[in-house]
Image (cartoon, rainbow over all chains, first blue to last red; front, top):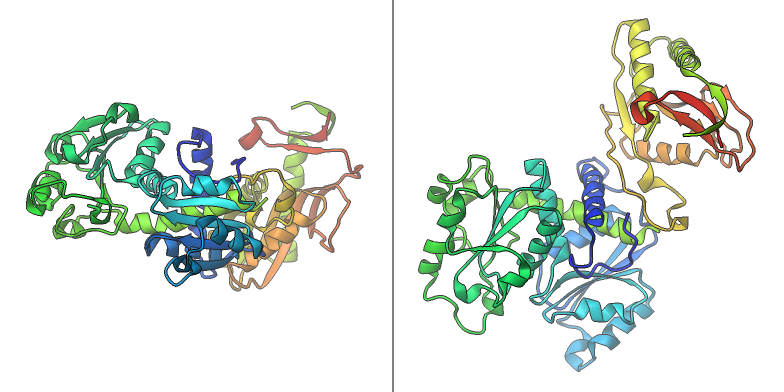
Length: 304
Length: 177
């Protein structure tokens, strides 16, 4: 059970709430494989996707999730809107809300926008990524995928590799994994580490090789050129050597290791193209599970 | 669980399910194309048991499924928070099958309505029948069970409790205290 109206981050969720989302998502996944992929649960509800940053996966995933539950889903993208005429965020949101909607799924480059919206929105606000802060639905779909593939989350060693400092995916995942009693280990060059990893309560490692022996799950992050103000490593080749993953390195990993990536992948940078063929690469399972998990979240937040 | 009044004990439940199984065979002239679908969280247990009895009578297995009707409920907006959705498992293609929905208690008929809608989302069965252990009256929809274990007239504020070994660790039907 989820006794809340908004979902702005993993930080606010209790373990049992995360578990009820994951449990409901299992049932939602079954719906995706029916001939008629639709249930009537959110008939008459309206969900607006309000994306101020580009996205294909998350926006489409929320759109499909809403439609599978019979909600009406409207997409709003910042380009081509009145924002370019100088309308403020608050005005934009208030105007969308005035058309009587039930939920607003928001992505924004500034941290805290979803939280700010909860201070004046009557509709449910769902965070689909805010700056470097959180991306809660990604962490939930990752936890679901880990549970599906490994049978559990508790006690697993999960290496999160890449640009930890700039990554909302990493932050939300660390919070979720810790609440589910897994052991997240962050890996990346010092320039991509947050100043205070102690505050996150996670272990650190200096290269992928150091964590290969023990990792049950390797979660690769995208090198986010758009969030980097200055180059944080000397060359892409050097980055790939120490923090990239390829088939050769994976031979040294546990035989049942799974490789994850939130997408979009920079093939040849964080992942070598030969990982595409790796049989325990679960990147596309993550995408499918994303729809199921978002259905569960929409159902739990909006159906009552 | 404290019961104010015991209505059925273990043996009575067993005999009743046996009778329902025989009625199913009689009405459908055998068990060809049958599929039992139990409504969670006790109908699926009863469906499993009826299937075992049918196997004893006809010497063949009848497929058993479990249905969670939460996503089809008409009263979600009246609840304070959304219940967790349990797994639905439909064991066969429902097209051209004879589906028997199994539940422990029929009351307003709204659960049966939701189950009908859910099953239709899987295809077009040749026919759908409804089997219940207890009919406690007070229907709010034009729905009538085909197989009834026991009719128990109740007042609206009374609560019928069905306890089954597999779920509750004990076996009884009663009115709650």
